[in-house]
Length: 113
Ligand code: DGP
Image (cartoon, rainbow, N blue to C red):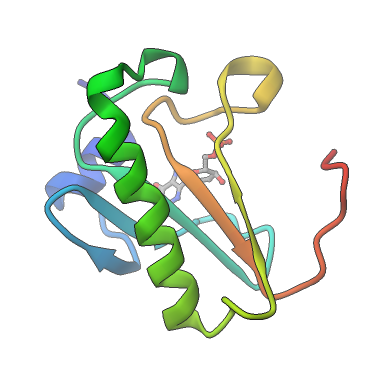
């Protein structure tokens, strides 16, 4: 399968990793939109949020827990941050392996563009 994030999981494409466990990997986004821009992905390939099933509930929880851990380790937990999951065209999804964006380090605007 030609998935860039599966290649990062496999170690075939390098990434600036901040966290790794049995379920998820967190690494810095190649095209950062904030001083800290980290992607949290499951090791297992799931194309979009639409493909999540009830059996994946714990995995989504692992992604959120990993995001919180990364935020604490980056020292941005208290100031705050944003977690984003883009889905399909209108959501702006460009990589079809689900990923949670963690954006931090500046005041973020709302609503998002
Ligand atoms: P999205 O638009 O939600 O699908 O976000 C995909 C993000 O993935 C985008 O911010 C850029 C990032 N990205 C794409 N390819 C790579 C890569 O090879 N390495 C890293 N670190 N990030 C990537």
